[in-house]
Length: 236
Image 1 (cartoon, rainbow, N blue to C red):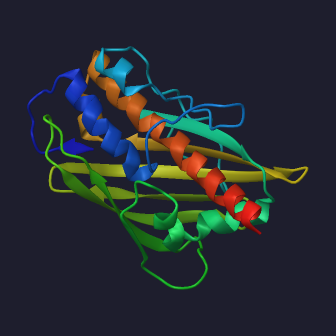
Image 2 (image 1 turned 180 degrees about the vertical axis):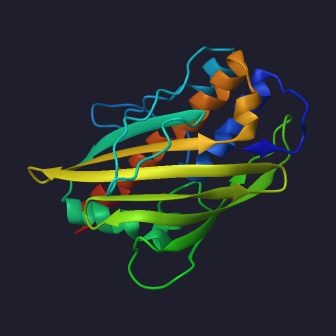
Image 3 (image 1 turned 90 degrees about the vertical axis):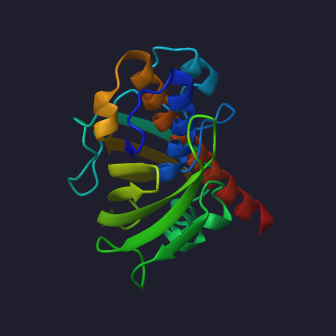
């Protein structure tokens, strides 16, 4: 990502912006925990980040989809996973119905397919998410254009693309999802990487704050997916 204001911000300001950035590719920030909630290797509360915590995003696990994975050499990588009490087919169909994301993901304002037909390894879609105004950053709306790079039906999908706004630009994000079913429940694993000149310029607690918040966004996307799928099953 790249901010239009080149001045070095205090950690609290960077963390505030990172809350919004976590919504960009991952869909949100960290949520409450229970036995079956998503467990993010990178999540850290905003209050800790603002205080200068040295928590860094843990690296992705290196899983792949048809041989392609995230960039493990990127400045920030993270991973998270969850168990959903539903068959894989139901989880998969909810996840790849990208046009329906705005109906169950809180951070997504708009979403549109840029092609037609079932999601495939040539599909593209564009979506937007707001970054709230704070005393450290103006309000912004980021537009993300994602290109699917690999897709194995019912098994995995990986996409990548930039996010652009008036104040913020993220050069490249890569997002991988894998799905496995056992005994009627589905395990979902996700990991992502970020490439951004701004991250390369940060040091110490400034970097830690952004890395932790960007990684933390994976949890709530998974929790929203779980709530959507299990809620739909309960309503049948």
